Image 1 (cartoon, rainbow, N blue to C red):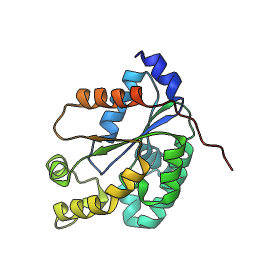
Image 2: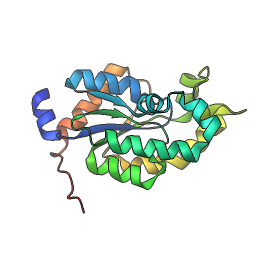
Image 3: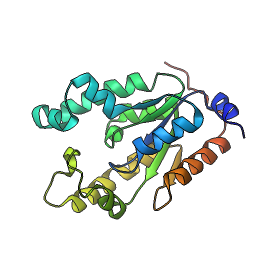
Length: 188
């Protein structure tokens, strides 16, 4: 199926959700390049808006205030039209974000288990929720709490496991090609 056909049938934002380190930004950039679409990263947009890193803001203002800003940014980015949006790992914590993402486009859950993630993130100091004594326990806790929310939000689940980025992009492309045309629900 041609890329143009896929874009015309989708006519909405393609959002990626998943735990921190699941590959949302990396895969999102490649998917956008492959589809010749704009790429949006909610974490980068938040940092640009705040003028500081998410980690600094988290430490200074707390998680609740960060989630307020995140909801505003997701609302804006999910209305940008056709494009690929990589969300932050906690974007699904608020029901309003889950609804907006689900209703405004196709959502792909990049499912990674905590064991895979710890391998990818063990030296990463920029993820505020993982700056704890036992990051593996924290990832297990995040997975248990968020997996049902990711599934509720997503139209498709893609297991990240060991495949290459190119293979994962191909898997997403196949899911999107098989999807029925996206029709935005009426606004109330």
